[in-house]
Length: 310
Image (cartoon, rainbow, N blue to C red; front, side, top):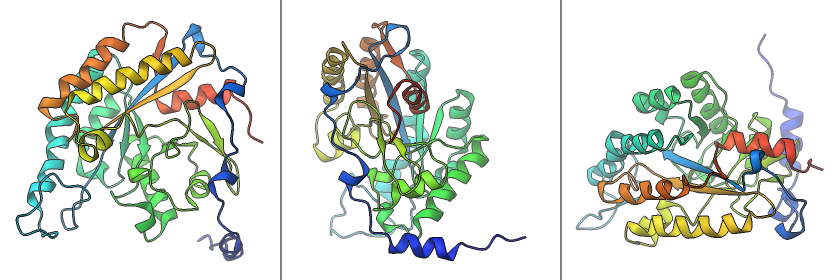
């Protein structure tokens, strides 16, 4: 029997005013919280996120490396589509070699449409037991998605079909959200989100139903920000990542901290940048009290040792 939509519940949701950020999460200085302890005396956990995106060649490119001589947004935009596609054809596989060499558990944030577009990438990640995180069905702002719930659900279902596992985490394309996103994620079965870059420890976010955990992500150690927006030279990624690691490691003397590294195959997977990405792990892997975890591992640890939601 076909399940009828719950019109009363939908009407009630529309009548409820949106939850503002300060209503989703109360201010909490990290120095006044009970200490969080990682297993085996570890001080901090690092998770490394590879963002795999599918750019629709029939639409204007979300990001560009080369502007056309006469300006505008010409179609087709072969140079900028190909710039991105290089990452999935070549750059991603450089990442795979680094992750394998340093035994790093990978996290792949992937558009739902990319699962069908790049089956070899999916296969390589599944073989290595990487975690799959929902990243929107297509690479566009969540505010521009016609039906956000459908997009979130389609992404989840595409990951299940491709991997046999339901994704536990979500990262919005460009970290974009609507006023409803955390509510919809919790209602559609996601356990954590990483859009709220405001802490070095996981935190609880209120929703109109059950709360959801936010796992620390990064805007500072993110190759989009550094290479495409701030236009730094390639070595900046390594320098900043190690500077950030040094400080967070010191901060974690009495309470555990989380550090994220975010990369895209078409950016840090480029030939002139890869060695600077690799250098990070040559340094950090020498510390025996630093864990490399997935987002799901960070979540499960926090659910066990962290505070309970109100």
